Length: 167
Image 1 (cartoon, rainbow, N blue to C red):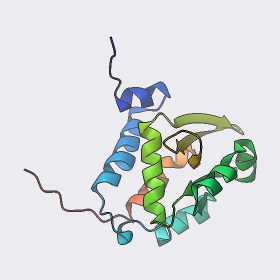
Image 2 (cartoon, rainbow, N blue to C red; image 1 turned 180 degrees about the vertical axis):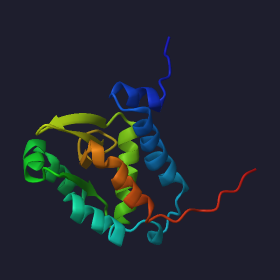
Image 3 (tube, rainbow, N blue to C red; image 1 turned 120 degrees about the vertical axis):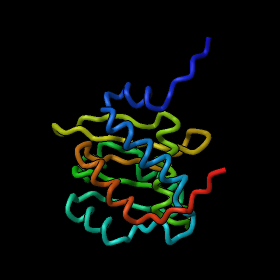
Image 4 (tube, rainbow, N blue to C red; image 1 turned 30 degrees about the vertical axis):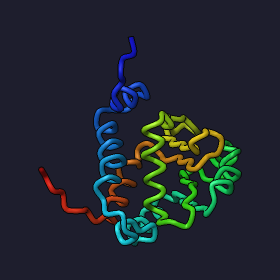
């Protein structure tokens, strides 16, 4: 018998708290779907995101091609050493960068590409999204667990929401 497993059950297996599970689902999956798809809705260079990155030393590295992101992400340990405060490397193919980053994170959540990683005495939430064939890395994110909620608050402040029409 094939039993369906909910997204929350998958996230709970990672030992995420209920609050973290809700944050993942609400902030990544739902907000991506509800936000307007235009370029003004997502802005990687929004002052709130820039301030957050400066304060926490999180490195956000957008690369234009999937092959470039894949090559950059091949040695995860080197990236962890180079960016101990965390990093997000992703491909955007010339499209809106922040929207593509969130899209890749949503896909990582949907396809079991999320894990908790211990490094240097700290816990990180790691997202890894691959191309449909599973060969190339489109996104590799390594965000300190205790800072994840603050990061999403900075992202949320850049979004404009479509009006929701109920049937």
